[in-house]
Figure 1 (spheres, rainbow, N blue to C red):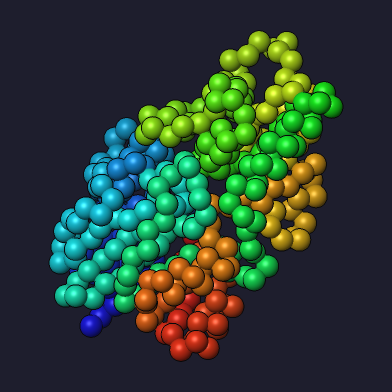
Figure 2: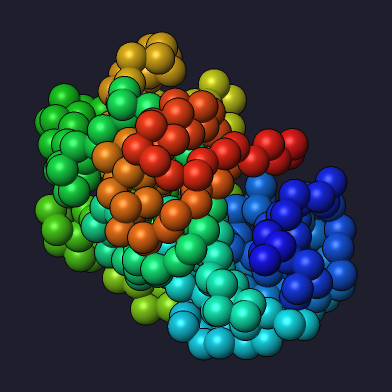
Length: 327
């Protein structure tokens, strides 16, 4: 049987269904795994995505985008392919794409993680013949701490800064990470405790609330008077705001960064007062466990440095190759 998914200049393509998965060029039919900008290309004629992420994708692509939401596990037909979307555990609405043609099953993972996250549905193992996996952190250097430990550390840092008379400025990605932090911190402080947000996060947090995700109360910084004293407060800020004049109104403050990139000695933490290892991607042990649990005989690796993983899988007797997605 021919491959169910092949690589074209536009991205991953399913010939039997005549659709692309997370294309990076405009195409007629796109199945989108989640609403991060590197997976959701604007200008495609039609989109399919998982229902919980519909509003996020609509915000990303614009009101005119023709998006058809699909419930997790719901089978729909595109051309000669039977397609269904399954939770990936990455962010709200993230999905793996299961494709079945004549009894052959492929799963394209998109981005995924295996750790507990109260802000999105947990990863679902989907058995398949070929598994297309992400490899963002495909190195033994990346092993995440136990679930919940990062949010506990963030809370302790915040409380220490409060005692010392500083605001706590936590840099984190606006979609997925900020909402996860807000959800996990409910375990440590009163649910009515207010966290302040950079305006880039406000609408996205609102979409999570409309999907029933429980998070701490929030208020945009730009709705506060200029003289507002932020000492003792936690403020979530996207990384692109680091070093900008906008931060001056939050002073005095200490800075932190929540990311999987804090999980290895790579120099990225040096410009922050504190780094917290909190990732929405699978670490090395989770990649290996997931591949094993899918039962796949063949593995294709994408989105990262996949050489080490491919070599290990080949040594274990699996068919393994890298997919070079140039975007």
